[in-house]
Amino acid sequence: MTRTSRRAPRRLLAGIGAAAVLLAAGACSSGGSDGTGGSGGGASGRPTGTVTVFAAASLQESFTTLGKTFEKRYPGTKVAFNFGGSDSLAAGITGGAPADVFASASPRTMKTVTDAGDAAGTPATFVRNRLEIAALQGNPDHISSLKDLTGSGLKVVLCAETVPCGAATRTALEASGLKLTPVSYEQDVKSALTKVELKEADAAVVYRTDVKAAGGKVEGVEFPESAEAVNDYPIVRLKNAGNASGAKAFLALVNSAEGRKVLGAAGFLTP
Image 1: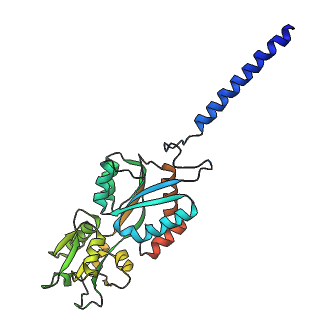
Image 2 (image 1 turned 180 degrees about the vertical axis):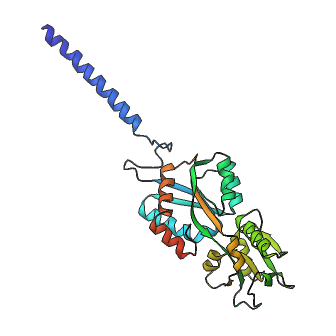
Image 3 (image 1 turned 120 degrees about the vertical axis):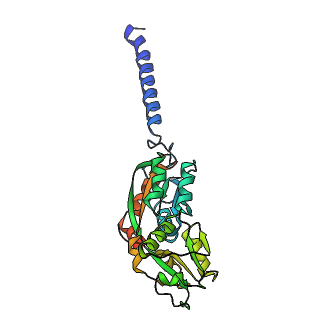
């Protein structure tokens, strides 16, 4: 055997070894670069898996619609929502509850999350909302103003002041110089609305979007003081999101023309 022929196997082995190194490097680089471990996006970069969204109760109808749109657009995905009072949701996030996106009904409750270092990037306001009185269907008590709610004999429900709708109501009452003692304080706006729908209360101060969502079960009464208490709604991807690419895609949908159309139809105002 010649010297040249003895070297050939060595060159072949070296080539095989180099190829193995390249394959191993390629395998390592194929994982998700966004920290999702590959669970948040497929090879095409499209979102996969479950996107967990914590959102203010007043967003329930519009976000549920957008969630269905998202799942249809990205087959194999699922949007899991947790709707509630923004303060409770923020406390859950800072306490370690797993979530990918947080949409709050006020900058104050969002600040709880950002101050804890749990937001990825800067929250952006995507809609605004204003208050409205929800009276019994047909408005039998002839409520026409915020002042009418202070009348004796009326059972009025308000949101707790720790949640955005309650804080906004307090601002509106202070702007009008009125004092109001409700029969109960509710932990989110949907709970306050339900009291009127079930005729357990004569009226509640909620968001205009909630009156619209009630679909005729209550009578909406606008009042000028609501202009003093318009709430900005910020949204953000969370720092420890288990599905970062899914979160980014959901935020993109919310901020798209399609998202704005759904939110506008629900009664939300553009920022």
